[in-house]
Amino acid sequence: MAGVAIALASAGSAEGQVRWQRGAAKVDVGVHVFRSTQSFNLPTAETIQRGNWEFEISHRFLPPLSSGRRGLWGLDGPVNMRLAMGYAITDRLIATLARSNMMDNVDVSLKVNALQINSRVLATAVALKTGVGWNTEVPGRRSEDSKNAQYYAQLIINTRIHKNVAFGVVPSYVYNFAIFSDDIEHSLVVGLYSQWYLGDLFSVLAEWNFSEAGFYFPNDAISLGIELGTGGHFFKILVTNSTALNPSQFLPGTTTDFSTDQWRLGFNVTRILDF
Amino acid sequence: MTARGITSGPLSLVLALSLAQVAIAGNYQVDLNAKNLVTFISDAPIEDIEGVTSAIDGYVSWSGDSLTSGADYDSSEVYFEVELDGLKTGIGLRDRHLRNNYLETDLYPYAFIAGRILGVEIAGDTSRVEISGTFTIHGVERPFGTICTVVRTGPTYHVMSEFEVRLTEHNIEVPSLMFLKVNEVISVKLNFYLRPMDPAE
Image 1 (cartoon, each protein chain N blue to C red):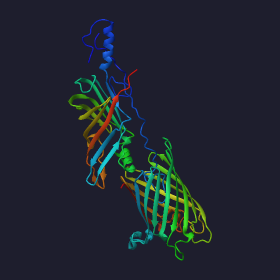
Image 2: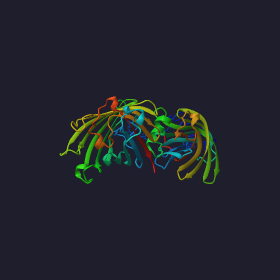
Image 3: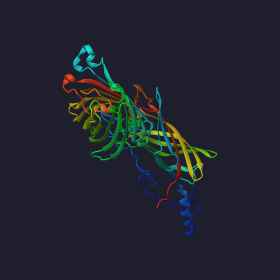
Image 4: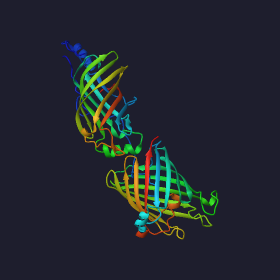
């Protein structure tokens, strides 16, 4: 008998006589709860790809919105601003150097994305951030004065509670939050933020930093606004009662309350760069 | 080679069986341990974007001993797939945009070619193999054909091919970079290795 035909069952292939099965395990793309590496003033658990850089420029306009048309609702300034550059040492570790014009605070920090839980119900990412903020231009003091140095450590827990709604809790500790006090003051702060993604581009974001810095900074810092995300850029526009930017200055709280006549405008721009 | 012509006796049946095994020797699959590379290139006014991945898998089968011996390709099969989650453009955030917003890999995880071999043209160690069938990406299937350069290196074949994909034909939104659109025609380059398929039980 000529030409014995052997028909093979197909497994894993669309049709036909050949047995083939997909060989490799599926690519793991990781758990990404938020899209940006930061909310308005607090970090998210997100890091960036190894070797990429992240540039940031942010403003907080000092005159409130209520100052009206003459001051262009605060946009005329003056302004507290921050410039930062982060570098991804690994896919999960980013080192950032930042400078704010508020007492010329220079901030160096490390953020590590420590844990990712890939759950359909509650996808979660946990990160840790720690840094030092050195106030280099303090009135009445030499810049090398050790009382100018502040330290902080943050635990960042992010969860996606819905397909388009992300939620973050950031308990933080600040050492020497009140640099003009005689003693070293410590503060424990809990930041909360939630972001609702309305599409590829646009989302709304709310942030509330619960602080207990009492005498020095009696009010919690609250920020509300929107974020626009394109491939590489995040633009955030917000109203807030806090004009501090660098973490050691922002976390302890603010002297202004969140009534509407105290609202200030602000923006954050971040851009991923690949040299 | 087939067992045609041998018509009698148990010996001939054994011979027929062994030759039939040779007759189905044209089964090759992508060698996942080799340096496979799939590249998607888009020319944009501001910069060229290149997405690369090694996540290619699939198989080729034909009845015939060697691809280049002028075998019969009527019942040949070609299937190659690329796992789009593996695409890297150099910027992690851009990769995520590509996956979530443009390619929607949660719905359509693979881009794949399915078809058959049309013909083979041999030129020394190298062959030009024409394949024809369909190309599917983002869940949309389109007719497809390309010519692959195939070089035999021992027991494996090195396959190279280049073709174009028009994003709009597959319902893929054309991304824009700084308000300028990326080229809607993407150039795809395949560079992978085939090894003999593991024998069937």
